[in-house]
Image 1 (tube, rainbow, N blue to C red):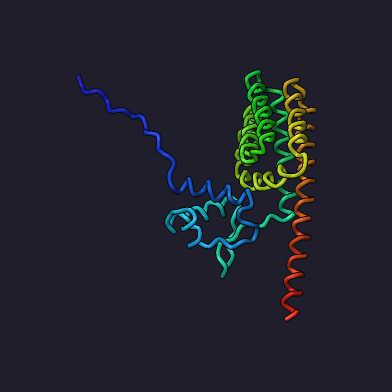
Image 2: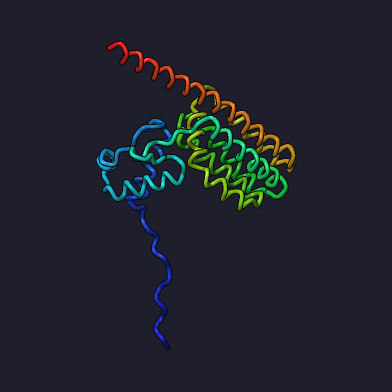
Length: 243
C-alpha cells in the first residue's frame, strides 16, 4: 500500500507588506490626506510607509490602474483629479448597472439575500452614527455586491469593481456632506423594501434615484472645490505680482 498523499491544502498567506502599503495609500487618498493634483514623492512615501522604493513603485502602479493616481510626464505620479465630467460618467454607469441589478435582485433574491442586505443597511446606519466613514464605504460596497449577486449580475459586478476605487473616492466626498447619513440610509431602505416586496420596477427606480441624488451632491461639491482652487490661484498670482 502506497504512502498517503501529502496534503494538497494551500497555506493561507499572511497579508504582504505591499498589500498593507497599498491599503494605507488608498485610504490616505480617499480621506484626502493627499490632495487632488498633489505630487507623490517616492522618497517621502518610502519614509512615511516604512517600505522600500520597489514596494512604493508597485503600489503607485496599482493605484494608477485603479484611477487614483496619474503619471505626468516630467513630473511623476500625482493624485488623480476627478473632474465633474468624469464624475458624471461614473454616476451614469452606476445608475445603469445598479438599476438593472436592483431590478434583477427583486426578481430572484431569496430570504437569505434580503436578510444580508438588511444587515448591511443597519450596519451602515450605525457606522454613520459613529462617524466611521471608512466603515460606511466598505459596508456600502458590500451592500451593492450582495445586490448584484442576488440578481445574478456577475459580469456587471466585474465592471463595477473596475470602478470601485473611483466610486469610493466620490463616496468619501459625498458621505461627509451635511445630513447625508440620514438621507443615504433612507434611500437604501427604499431599495431594500422594493427588493423585499419583489417589485422589480420600484427597485430599479429607487436605485437610480439614489444615484441621481448623490450625483447632484458630488457635482455641487466638485464645483465648489473648483471655485475655491481658482480663487486660491488668483490670490497667489496677485501676491506674486505685488513684488
